[in-house]
Length: 312
Ligand SMILES: [Ca+2]
Ligand SMILES: [Ca+2]
Ligand SMILES: [Ca+2]
Ligand SMILES: [Ca+2]
Image (cartoon, rainbow, N blue to C red; front, side):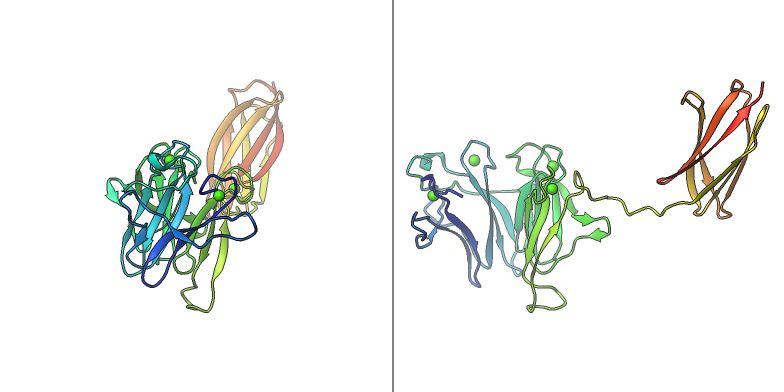
């Protein structure tokens, strides 16, 4: 991103070490090299630094005014620190830019400071409801989800939840850093993450993982439903009562409907196949005029149908 507004992209790093974390910038020299790194400061003259461990950063215009702000998650596995927002100081936003930031505000969940050790944070509208959400991970190896309660700039989020796939809570290696981006270009934010190491292999392995959002993706959020075999038998022709027999390979609910010859649904009822696999019903059809009808059974994604005639 272009930190200093000179039209060249610069490298901004949230840096960790065993003693402290900081935010540093390598300025683009325009000749294929970058400058030596320099610290990012707040208006008091102090550099943005954590007392231990790491500083995880996201650059975004959190307080929307056209000036980028810094989301910084700090801390280490031995100390809890907060997810902080450093708003860009308007007084320093004049060319040539050397952005300095205001004293930080702490993001909260239902009024309580969001506290993880360390706080690997990212803001994005993951559930696509128009309000940006916060995803934070820490040494617990999973992703905590705080649903947004208002537009960009709202400091308070909903209660903590945990990100999951249809098969359960997402668990990756140690201290995974979330990044929300529309990786597959289908309009919803996906979760891209890298982690230090797997819990079972310790420091021998690390990885980058992509979890695609199911809001718009061609990913079925449901566990695939087994195909149901349906057999349906109906007496015909009838005068006042039709006898319907349904056999299914799997017990469970199904929808029984009757359609008239012009396609109108004239009868509909939720039914249930017991363990016997058989459903049987004598249905009074005196409410229907004589004619040709179709019985349709729908169970899961399977359907079966057959016709019958009501005589005058
Ligand atoms: Ca630049
Ligand atoms: Ca801003
Ligand atoms: Ca949201
Ligand atoms: Ca997507």
